[in-house]
Length: 100
Image 1 (cartoon, one colour):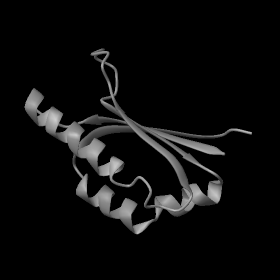
Image 2 (cartoon, helix red, strand yellow):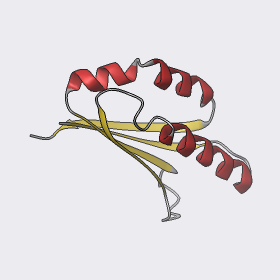
Image 3 (cartoon, helix red, strand yellow):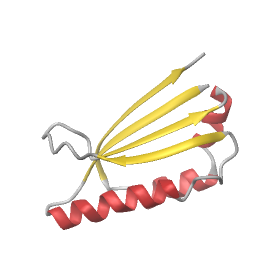
Image 4 (cartoon, helix red, strand yellow):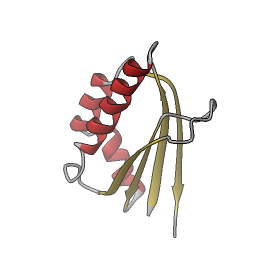
């Protein structure tokens, strides 16, 4: 199994703008559930810590194999979502790791 974790800071000059962008990210990724082969688990979370160095949103996904993660990366639904969210983030961090 391979786990794919992505964290974002989102753009927004005001709290309502940031909140709207957080909701866009969350709803966009939640809409992918059950639609991409090999994606066995998808969870989106919003930071509640309020710490100034925390990311705003985290995506936690699991795939059976590295090939499934690679297919997800170029899947048309994922590619479309990336286009829709273009300009929403100010920072992005990613970790992929294998669990035996």
